[in-house]
Figure 1 (cartoon, rainbow, N blue to C red):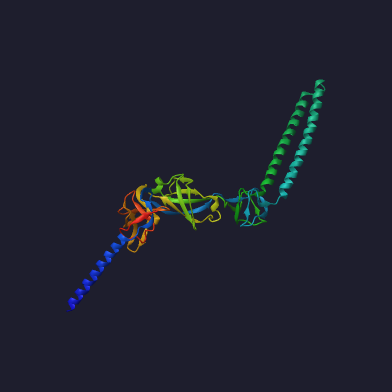
Figure 2 (cartoon, helix red, strand yellow):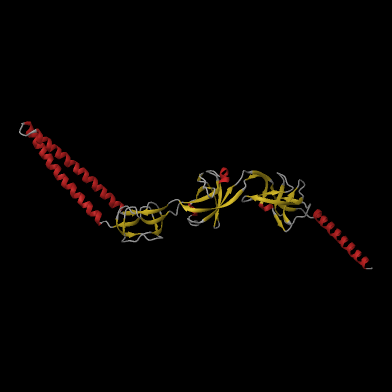
Amino acid sequence: MLKEIMLKKILKSSIVSVIFATSCLSYAADAPPSPIKIDTVTEVSLPATADLMGTLHSRSFVTITAGVSGRLEWLQEPGIMVRQGDVLAKMDLLPLQLKQAEQKAQIKRASINSRYFKNELHRLQKLKKTNSTSQFQLDQTKSQYELAQSDIEIATLKLKQVEDELRRATVKAPFDGVVTERIVRAGTDINRSDALLMLLDTEHLEVRLYVPVKYLAYVRKGLTLNLQAIGQSISTQVTSVIPSTDPLSQTFEVRIQIPEHLNEYWTAGQLVKVTVPVQDTQPSLTVHRDALILRKEGTFVVKVDAENKAHRLLVKVGKGTFDRVTIQGDLASGDKVAIRGAERLKEGQSVVVQ
């Protein structure tokens, strides 16, 4: 008796399932055509890529040094933005000003001697015409006059050296930037070339990326790469490739200049994700990202045949670009797939392409 009851239940369930499937097929056949938008399956050569981390660097991050020896009188504060030519440091100018005054006095003294021997030389030359002086005395005075002329030249050169030291005693910014560190304090006695400040150029940045040497053949100057950091994405070209491999890390350096409009978002020392090619490009079938239908069972696309009938196909998704992805499945180049209105389509349902 129990077996008969179970058989009746199973038979009843099977009949219900058949009726339901038949009704679904009937609905798909009888349902009015659904409007959709389509895209074409295309074969594209997409390179295999890897995401590597690079670091932003300033193209100009320099140590500002003293131009002369002496006592440091004033120094710029860290964090201050400066323009090219702004004063960064000042030395005590009094010793140099005294040397400048001394050299001017030396030039004046040499000029007095030069005028005296010049007049004396002219006087002896006139006397020589009447044989009233000796040739020895004339030659001696001429030599003294030429030495006085040389003294003027030497003193003038020394004055220019002092004036150059006076100019270098005021240290000016070589480019626009920000003072990041003050190494010494005002009032310190320093020597020429001692480090005073660190100056960072915030306007001209570049990414320095270390790429495994096995990818050297795929990275070249002028290659366009994608960069991402803190929500900002750009595509820009490789500025330079330095084909010198580090023996420990087995990597080579790649540098990429950053557009100036990103300076307000990116800064030196920040990490940047860089997508680089790692093998030769291979042709693959691609569809628009909007064609993908994500379900628990997998990822599907809806193919539209020549009779405008919809067919849901299971596909495997691979790498992609901004708007297209590679797929593997029962598709061929040139097939049409729905990119709008495909989610509720039944198998075999008619569609209208908009």
